[in-house]
Structures are given as C-alpha cells and as structure tokens.
Image (cartoon, rainbow, N blue to C red; front, side, top):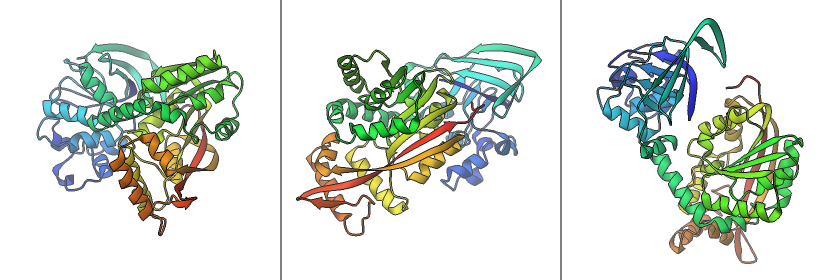
Amino acid sequence: MKIKGKAWTFGDDIDTDAIIPGKYLRTTDMQVFADHVLEGADPEFAGKVRRGDVIVAGRNFGCGSSREQAVLAIKHAGIGCVVAASFARIFFRNAINIGLPIIETGAVVSCKEGDAIEVDIENGVVRVDAGVEVAGNDRERTECAECTEYTGTKMPDFLLEILMDGGLVAHRKKQSAKERFGRRSDAYSRSSVLSDAGHLNLIVDLVEPKKSDRVLDVATGNGFLAFEFAERVSVVTGCDMTEEMLKIAEGTRADRGLENVTFRMMDVESLGFGDRSFDIVSCRFAFHHFTDPTKAITEIARVCKDRGRIVLVDGLSSEDAQKSEYHNVIERIRDPSHVRLYSQSELVRLLEDAGLEIIHERNWDADFYFDEWMGIADPGDEVTEQVRSMMLDSVVGDTTGLNVRFEGGRMLFTYSTVILVAEKTEKRE
C-alpha cells in the first residue's frame, strides 16, 4: 500500500485531547469526530485537510488517554496515514485495530506543511518531496524540489495484515469470507444467477469495450465476467482474495483455451497495480462483501485510466430504511461475511463522491429459489430454518422489499440488481 498526499505537520506530544477534545465524546456520530479532528492543536485543521492527506508528527503522538475516538476521528476525516517519530503505545494498538495506516520513523521527518509525501506502508519507507506542493489533485513542482527518504520500523506481518484489511473487525470478516467462499466455491460456480449468459453479455454491451482495452475484474470469483470480457478485449486480469475460487477460474480458463486472461490473488481494498493501469475496471455481485466501500472504490478509480470506465454490478436493498435493515439482518445471519447491500441511490452517491460520472444505470431482476440461495452459503440446518422463518414473516407487508412468495410450493424471492457504468474524470488521483 502506497499513500500519497499533502503533509500536515505537528510537533511532539500531541495528546488524545488535542486530537478529539473530550466535549465531543458524548456522541457516536463519526462525522462529529471528523469535523473536530485535531481541534486542540489546530482549530482550523478539519476545514483544511483533504481526503488522502498525511499527518507528519514528532514524538509520542497520541499520548494521554486510551480513547479510541482519537483514532476514529483521524480515520473518518479521511487522513491517508499518520507518520510520527514515535507513537504512544495504546494509540498505536488502537490504530491497528481500527485500520488507520501509521508508520513509525524513529527520527523526526523533516518537512513543511504542504510538501508532497509518499508512504510505503509494507516496507516502512517515507519519501518527502520538499518544495513540491500538493494543491487539490495536482502537484506543482518548484526548482528547489528535493527528495528525502526515511526508513521507519517495518511492522510484523501479522499486524500489517490486520492493518491492510482495514482493522481487526474487518480482518476477521475477511477471514470468514475467505473460508466460506473457499468452502462453497463449487456451489458458486453452479449458480444460475451468477452464470446467467444474458446478464453477462448485457454488462459488457453497456461498457462498450474496444479490442485494445485492458480490463481488471475485481472480486472475480469463478471468473464469469472476466471470461465474457475476454471474448472482446486484448487483456483481462481477474483478482480475488479466495484461492479456491481462483483455482476454479484458472481451470475454466485452461479448458476454454483463453490465453488473454490471467488471475491473481488480491484484495480490492489494496490493489497491487500502478495508477491508471486499466481501461476498464469491473466488479460484479461482490460489493456487498467489501468492509470499506469507500476505500474499494478509491482503489478501483486509482487503477483506472482517465476517461476509462468502471462498471459496478450488485444486488440492491430497498430505499426504505426499515426494509433495507431487515433485509441486511437476514443476509448477515445467512452469511456472516456479508457487510451490506446498498440501495441504488447509495451506490450512485458512492461512485459520484469518488469523482466518477454515471453514464448508464440499468436494472435487472433476478429470481432466487430459497433452497438454491441457502445452498450456496450452506450455513447449516439451524440457520436455514431461522432464515426461512424470517423470510416467511416478511411476506405480509413485504418487509424485506424482496417480494417473497411461493410458486409450486417452493419459496422464491426477487433480487433487484443494478448495472452502473461510470466514467473516470481526468486528473483524478
């Protein structure tokens, strides 16, 4: 993970009360924390800092109380990373557990406010471009630019893995997802909805790929969409974090003799590709498993070329908040790796907030028989019966928004899904 941004400098002994003053601790509203981050050290900081910027501090950053709200305030303000000569131990632990990227350099990093800074979390390296000011998404280089590198303390692999996964809760959820998807990879390969040729063809038609295009399919699973793109473009890369899924995809690729498709094991929230590497980036029926949707979209946009296209396909939850919550409760009981299905308006807003322009919205309904849907997750008899009961309870008033019903004595329901095609605007970092 490499983080590039504008440096904001602070001195030694920045304590947790300076990071988030105690008078704001009565709320659990993350936006309140973000709006007042580091108010005790710089009252204007929250209004000046931008998503992806980097805090550069001296020694003993985060000293004081053990309040985790200090880390939450920094993370929800969009800070890309905190670099410090040293951290208070409890703050360091909280940062790892919550998923705030940090790096300890041992020595004070010499830079001034506004300098461009790049942090390589995995290797513990900090690079400062003195005299290179970051304004918005552009860097304005002056003649006095000078680069200095600092080698900090490299984190142990187990801590790095937790941090890269977005914190301890997200790490455990991802581990659960790997185990579950690995165990049920064969069932996913047989899913009638996931393998629907008409739906796959529609997605590619809407994207309008050129033969010369390079495509990245994130969370590719068994590679259904990757293979559809492979028929029409020059190069396709599929990535997924589940080894068993990729083994099935690779076997299918070999059987079909497709030489323009490769697969790599990789997490969407930390893509190992350079900026602007692909003409098209796609994601189908996986977004509801992402622990940090904003980070996932940011990474997807980063690796997409300017004027390139991003296609996001997923099931939808109701625009009605109560129906959406009940639906998502059922989904999490069925599959604990489930994070959240979003409404269509929420997905559109997430893409637009990332600086992407929606050019196509196409809805598509998919009917699922209850037994097939539960068979894919295979949660066991007790959970199956619990979910069956909750689905039955939802029929009157359609409290899930899924139109649960019976045909021929079999329970089925309808997933509303959406295909969103967006274009990446130029000069996006």
